[in-house]
Amino acid sequence: MSSLRPFRLTAWLAAPAAAVLLLLAPATQSHAQTQAAQATPAQSADPTPAPPSQTTIAATSPEQRGVTTRAIDKVKQVAKSAADIFSRVPCLPPKGGAKAMGSLPHVAGKLVAGKPVVIVAFGSSSTAGFGASSPDFNYPNRLATQLRRHYPTADITVINAGVGGEDAPEMMKRLQTEVIDVHPDLVIWQVGTNAVLRNLDPGDTAKLVEDGISRIQAAGGADVVLVDPQYSPAVNQRKESAGKMVKLLGKVAELRHVGIFPRFEVMRDWHENQSIPVESFVIADGLHMNDWGYACFAQLLGDDIIRSVGQIKLGVNVPADVRAYRPM
Image 1 (tube, rainbow, N blue to C red):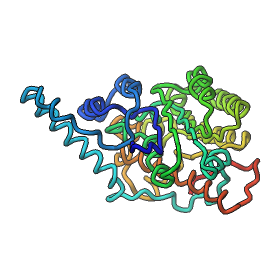
Image 2: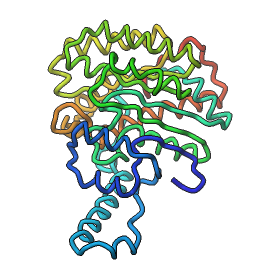
Image 3: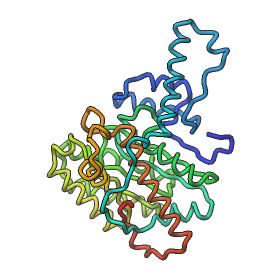
Image 4: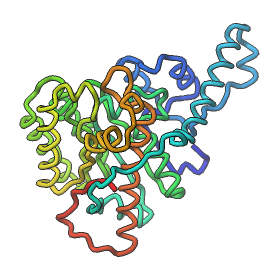
């Protein structure tokens, strides 16, 4: 983060030493490792942690210096790949997808007015960033980076409230403390995947999510965007349940007049229409996204937010009760 601190990212951004240790770990880290990385206090939004001081290096053994040097090189490589991750496979919107979208009036109005904006990314392991090679590649941090580039003087906080393994029942238990009490302007709620994998009733999940949205709206009127399950081999093994979940979350979004980011549809388009191999955006466990998948997901979601702000700047009249939208 620069000294001006246009952003305050309060989760997943570790101190330099912690970032180095995380980068030395295997890409397919455990959920426990992911949780531990999340618990590290935020220090900097810069993708490349500062190298240790000369004094610190001199105090270590030759073996330790070798490990430190390799870790720093790894950090630099990750930083470089963060900039050119789309150089070989571009991130494109779905072909022939729905073009119309509503707005995110609360967060957009704050950005237009130059007021501080708080965004809470609420969800499970897809939000926490399981499968990413470093914290810089989870989707909340990628989204924050994109918004920082577009609004360099904005005061934006992106909070990563993702906890691996959870779904609606567990999330509802922490909705008050980790979402509502933060007084967010935008809540991005990724939900439904673990319910599908556990064979839970999609209808029960939809009801809990609807109740949660009602509580968020009653507490302060924050904008809400739902993110449905991912298109991946593990989810596709339960195709019928996944299909019901996607449809029901879409209906909840329409009923509560909130946004819906159709992740399942977007990821299926990557594979079926853009001919991108599944292994190019999903890691070996057949479930979680990799660096490219998180980056493209964040890019398309960020494009929606930026477009919504543009609508308000141009004076586009979007009815307040028509906010559900599809990306692109």
